[in-house]
Image (cartoon, rainbow, N blue to C red; front, side, top):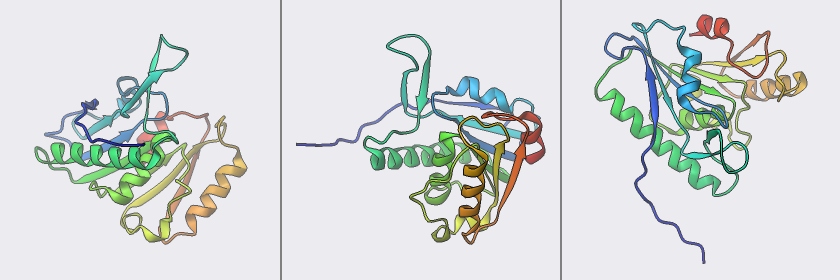
Length: 208
């Protein structure tokens, strides 16, 4: 017989920048198999006085190869999928409450890379962050979600960013996904850069 129990769990996040002087906060959600202390380095080209970056780590850690060596983190798998989605939305909601209780920001940016794009999409839809700018980077919008029924995407400036040499997504898949997204009531802008499945510094700096 299957049973569940709710428990308290310690979650890790790292930050970059000065929250007292920053006018813009960026929640940056990492991709599959990444750790936040390395992922946040992609944002260190931003001015620390003007930007405060928060990188939460997925609650599921695992060895990338075998049973030892390098470790990565994940937001969810197909197993207990709905439960994990609710857990990470609650986790991100609580983290934002903790940060916003201490500091105020003029602009809120939500950035999701790769697997973190689906996480960011769901949090933007059902969470409490209410981003002014939403960036789906090298990621596919969750196919189980109907963007037409989600008003938060109508309130934000939305961007769909891909590298021209992305090894996980072909040009046809990217274009098809963008066509699907554009059918919603929310405006998405497509941005492409010369590169692979990664975060291009120049494109990121220009965007935020």
